[in-house]
Length: 186
Image 1: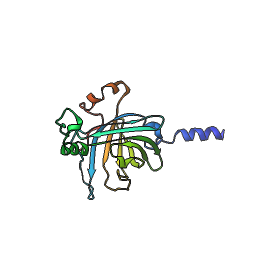
Image 2: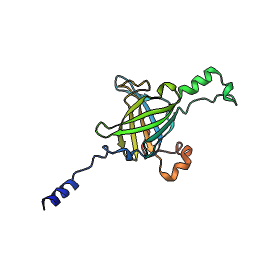
Image 3: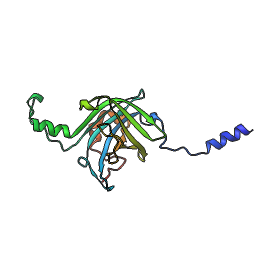
Image 4: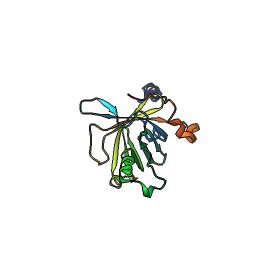
């Protein structure tokens, strides 16, 4: 009788929605907002109001992320080999792209991206740690805890991602133009 009572008691304990394992991340997510906090606690958009991006977490622990400033101008050439140094610099500053593996620490509420390939060769081999919290509307907030240089930061960007439903994955580009379920942060 006591074991049954214990099971019933455990069933009544609320589950912390934020303390989820890696399976909570599995799927495709589109970028909703990127905010840059300052040392005074204020935030401003890191890029424009509608950043473009997608992050994918696979059940086997593989991830890939692509983020773009929607305000990036075109390169102005038909062949990448003909791009000017200034146009290349502008394009590079407005993007971040990498892939690798990921692990979730539910106690610390962090997700670590171990970089295996990236737009910046210096990122390869680094572990990028993000604090996480799940938001209403099937969204997740990732807060940069270690920067691209691998050092801890207290003023890292805060990125909000919205899960892309399986039925809409074929139209990810269109999804960026629709209103997200989780609101864009100011």
